[in-house]
Length: 184
Image (cartoon, rainbow, N blue to C red):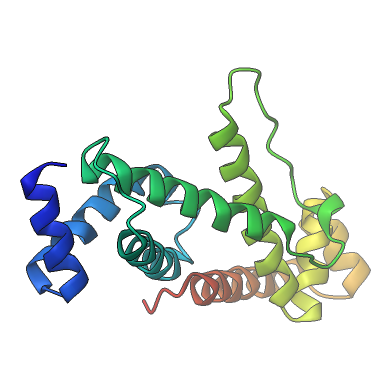
């Protein structure tokens, strides 16, 4: 085992802020491919990685056959993938027919396929949390109905419907941000 790795492990397990910052920087780099798909869960994943790494290091699972950084990257990748798989498994309201599916291409990597599914899941969760009138409006739009058709069916003027659609989009964005933990 490299002497620098031994020192870093000892300082990290003691809670040395400088060592924790090094590990956090490694996390940021290793989790970069998952950044967009785990935007809502980034802090949860970071905490899970720290817990997993501390446990593994205390158990002596790191034998020094590779550098600590390489070992850590594997912990980050497996933890991110586990969180993505958990997201995909969660159940949701049966709105799938109304959410456009992004078609996979033959050259998509398994990671890209998993990331696409997680993104679809987040859109569905946002749609589920919209108030019923907004959800119904969004469903009509996704079905391909024009504003004129929708306004006639709902007994609204086209201008009033456009304002309602704008407000629903604004509310959907706020819900999306809440689901992602974004405070802006």
